[in-house]
Length: 319
Image (tube, rainbow, N blue to C red; front, side, top):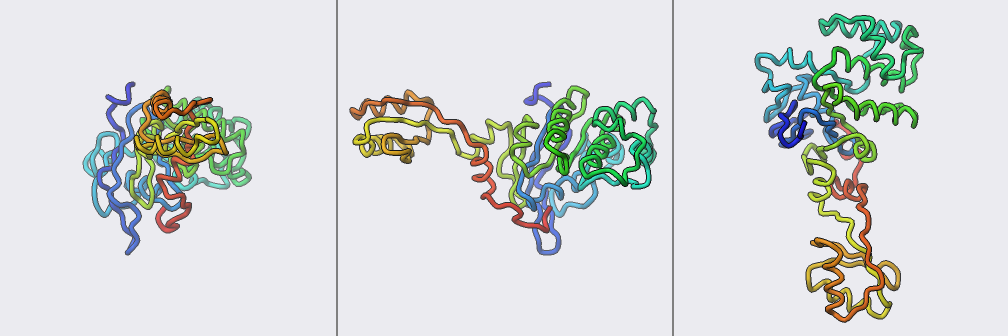
């Protein structure tokens, strides 16, 4: 489905949330298109978990409104919408003395679902827990518990699944497995909203993202769109004779381009550049011979740091 025309399965419209005098969310607005894997990205304490809890009705908003599967607010149909939404929030709620299989059955009963053995077996296979299906959750590692929580969230084939830091506790190979699983969920008809404070995970897992800082949306869209919104471009590296650096910087500054030295004979050039020929034309016009001109890659980490201020854990009381 084309995201440009896909109806959103979840929306936040001007959501505000306070805990006493602490502002956890401040006018938060973004949407999750059907068929997408949408990342909710921000430093620890930026309000990601609070936003998810508001969407699921686990806490009330101070201002604004949400919609879930087309149901606005907490009106008629909200309970049904929640029942059609899978979630893994702040770690799975497990019965330690029950097995993985029994935990899924208990979860199904709590949601009023019928759980067939073949579906449970398929889910356990999907998350890599088939060999531990009848082992007690008490003996599971944090990563195994996360896998079981994901299986529970996917029970019944939900239209939307909401995952809060789903790779917590996983080893590197487990992270790759779960990441690939999440990326494939839209093929099963499940849209995904996944929160994370790790840019690398969102970049590899999601086709779009909303970035928040201190409860405020600072960017939303595809990764390319977010880069554009940040104003952080890859820019160009241009090389010339060392004695021409000063003249090159002056010529480029006259057309609004920003330069910074890269050694004795090169500059990094950024700003409103349509393509490299623009830089070359300016320098040739100034009588400067360009020996090398190449585009530099965009540093997404720099984009994230620019948008969020580079502060992790800015407000520990505003999850």
